[in-house]
Image (cartoon, rainbow, N blue to C red; front, side):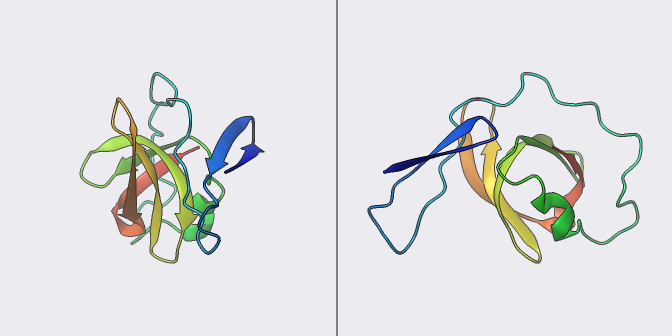
Length: 109
């Protein structure tokens, strides 16, 4: 097990499997209230969120508004060409999940 710190948030990794390191959820809950939703989406009319734009949010509390109305706190740990994976806050705990970039309406971190 080893310890890393990024932007004042500690991460613990289990390195007993030297071939893969599994990300660990944040050790604290996200901010108590969501940020205000922007008036308009910077990606309005686009097919999907650009991976480069959400990559800057890695390992940071990120609020996501999905197409269809759902919104939640997210802690991204991986960004691919068409998806992002990380930890979603359920209101009680962090749960690891993946999200298609097409399903994201907008986000802020």
